[in-house]
Length: 458
Picture 1 (cartoon, rainbow, N blue to C red):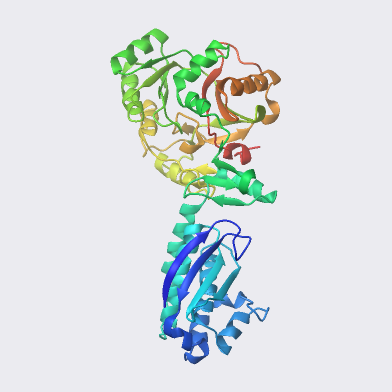
Picture 2: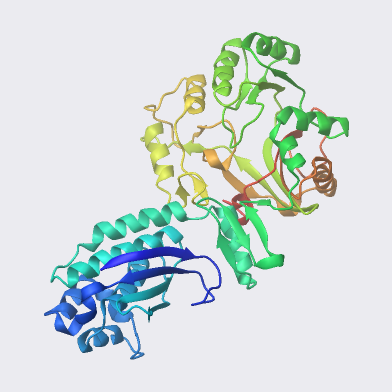
């Protein structure tokens, strides 16, 4: 028995309206050996994969597939059902499948549904191996195979922003096709299709994305149009950075001119020694560095879609709270044990990692990872409030001042983006921004949606 061809059919196809895995399988000599001719075949399969009892098959009732095994069915039919069930055991619930004869006597076309393409493909390959062994009177340990499929499934999971758009499209009856292993997705078919990548849309302005990607250019454009922004100077070596910080006056913020997820950003820098460390950290992300005047206030994110204010969140950097007995390391581990926290963007919150930013904050407080915090003491272990570095978010949508909403919508038009995240540092969003008491520190061309869809509070 050998696989002649296996591939994913990503849209409506000859066999189904749903995406399916297509496998051309040559069962060779097994054509002459149906399952009822193999001693103990049903019992071996039942013991190895008891969940197959739920497959109704042609009898149309639970246990129907085992009835077919007992009466005698071909290897291709068994491969179809095992490929489906392996996906279910790995957490991808699917049910549709067919085994179809072809012009060649021993060759069958097998099709079955999938959710994650690579899981479906691998399940088919595993199924052929399992069935080949069953016809030799051997069973297979399924646990390592299911573990591998789960790893493939986890890699295949869409990020929360992309997933939210795909789920809404499906709710409206719009078919969705994933076009790569990342977040590139096609919605609909033919002339009506649209494509997205996370919160980037096929209509998003390339110029707008370039502007948003360059923090200095963004600041200059916004400042020219009267939007409050912190003073800043772009530099390309440490001496210029020191001169810029002296000119602006401490405290300052150091950030890579181009970067994302808060990487390389250090805030509230008080002196030249701290500036040197921060500059070297930022330099790892981008050669050109922006030195900005530090704004005192809370960290907010405003989301504007299609020119209209949609949502606002207050973001708080990752923190731990003392209990009189646990070390800082223990407290971080406890926070990371939250099932809502995952790696990167896979869940609503991100696990806290210990990096140069964490070590600096501990050093400033004259603490270490082995320090024990008094009960109730709050310690920030990140200086930036990005969710991707472990931060949390509180919904503020209902209390944003009308003039702040109008300002955000105006920024979207100025930068030229149909989906934009606007980062603001200010004492509050319940009042209009004033110079030196709040400002726009950054804009994002592909803003994450999870802080608005599932805020930590509100």
